[in-house]
Length: 335
Length: 291
Image (cartoon, one colour):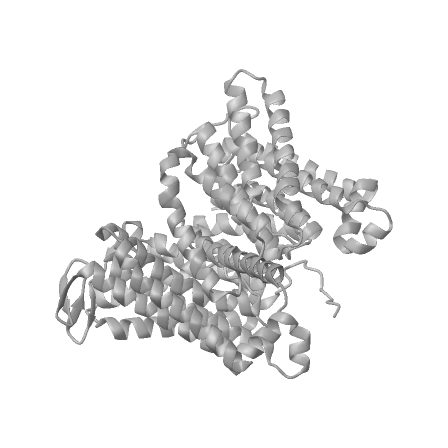
């Protein structure tokens, strides 16, 4: 039983890896690569957010604040103060994790959607600071961020590299890097879900009272998963800043936070691969809807509403339920 | 010195009254359905924008206001009937995302119909400001406060004196029990959305001459209303009014005496302080959860 479950868990990861390996065959130009690389970084962020939403039953309306803080920490530390990329990324994640702990610990002891209000507030405060501290952040105009650099070796989307004797362009190298990051992010999330922490979290989601009765310190686990999801956001924000080479306070905006949480709910709360699908769909949709020009927002809102009304469990869970029902029917018909 | 203080106080109370009306709208829907309605700000926008464009077409002011409020009311009912009611099996989080979708949709339509520009609405009465101890009071502020007070009194009467109001209260307290005594809860939910939309649109209309109006004004006003409701204790009517007024005043004082750049941060810092030190808000009921 456990064995087959392990296999199914790995199967998802293998399928994702295969998709990421095959995908470049369909990517025609640097713009496509840029879009898919952004998708991978954002997908990894929502995989982290999903841990909070799907397994602690709490929503964050300010995750872009953590994402933005990671991005700006990297931008300021590497750009203004000449830090190397990895220390900047790690220290940024520690700072963001600490903020999440300070905010989450007292609030997650309460019942109800208080965390959503607190995260909304934290996200806004971060965005307001990034907009106003012009000397540090460049204000609303944003700031440039140096290329990702490790052991003196730079990874720029505009460079040219040689990997195992094959010449590749910078944007292709970034695609490979982001793909590996996404796979690691998913692998870590899946392992966390199957760990004792994950079991405790699922019990919190099922019934917080029952969980606390059997001795699970629910507030501690909820705070822990909140911190982990914030760290995911910070790390991805740092990478995003390096990849884009330029950041503005929009990365920390409320709209961006709403986009993150929408990706989770649309794709399927609690489904790691579902939320990746959510990220892909919501990142592609504006590209597709751009043809509608001024009706773009109308269409976007309408699609969002209709999907949630008719597929309240989210895209992937609904689709898999549909497919397995069809397969069962088919199998029943043949027998 | 006094003049300066009074000036900030007038500004604060005026915008605070608007926040209070928005917060009341949130509270109504939250109590009836536990949904945080992120489309609440769009009711304000519809109220203000429809009034501006109707008067521009030559419709008399009073008729334009009535039509705009009716339009918002219909929108509120439609939101409940076509977006929230069909998804009744869904998680509350899913319902919240539906209201986000609805707000993007409504905003999108408003942008197509009315464009992206700011629109100016005339003061209801004189443009001549009133001088009070050296401070300047916009005559429209009196309208905001007067109409706000009338609406609050009206709501109190509605909930305590009328059968429909009591039915809404009963449903928000216990939906199953309400259904058992013969209250049509689906009807009640629709009513809650309608009343909430009416409140929002009136707030949007009275404040429009002060803040101007545009297709995207609902985002930040709606959020401030939500903050006010959270400060007051989400679900409490008194809390919504006190939360709205105090948010407005603190914000205006902070903008005046500290920094206008960080004016918006005040609202969100207040939420955090309230959550840390009195998590049920100023007036939130102590929730007893049944297992």
